[in-house]
Image (cartoon, rainbow, N blue to C red):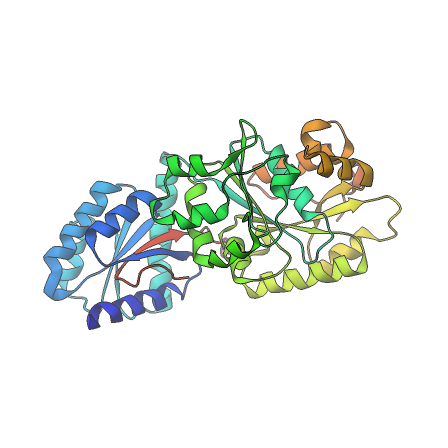
Length: 399
């Protein structure tokens, strides 16, 4: 329908002006919206109002709030008559946007909705934290690090293996999964807590795995928007979500990085490793990620490496927050046996450092760089319809 399609397009374009809002779903029918609302539990819902169907729009606002009282309702319309604005507010909408919207007005509206959402989260269950592990090149041991990091989390954790072509997390954990990320994707429209529980592979009381596709060709079924929605759902069930990513900036990887609260960038202290890390940081800058979202970890650290750490930090423009020691034999035994080192040898130097890094990630505050021996030195997706569910992301403080 012409006006609905136009409103839909303008809402998407408006939200694209500000990086805090991510579209999770679009719905045209009220029943479809209420189903997605119960399943996705978004921070906010945007409702496109039409002057010739105002009563239907106002009734929908009431149904949304009855279904999800902690969800903020944002109404939008090309018209800004008192009947539309006051009517939407009286029926429970928190904000109104006239389409098209100036970026400054959008920023103000999202600021106020963000404050409401943060207050609601503080008053109820907080959503889980997504930690993505990434390396600019292969061979840095990022998957081993990610696996042990997930095991080291002292909280209910879900580990997603998004190395879709050749993920080894199940092997590293000694698991033989029956289901994989593909099964979550195929059941996405009915995915809830109970179904998630049935499709993950349990490793311990605190850790479950979503395995990479069991067959290589199945990776073709996975789209970026699927990853966005899955991460949104699992972070409401688990306190920590650890994501192991491939070494390329493909659309699925970028979708996971977009959703991450923190990115642990893993490097080895050799020229290719430092160069690839520098390139990755430049890509993160172009993607608009705040630097406080990124933490750089050195893997395979050895005292024999002839590199001045201060110069590496200066070159990268980032502090190095962790140094995982190099012990080839221990690591290979751990991988071959499918027994995470953090679990089997918790007192080993590798395990102790990974647990220390996990502790930093568990905290929300910023940390300082540490040398070894503790010496301090200086997208829219889904159905094409008119009501939009949003996830609001925390933004860096204005400077």
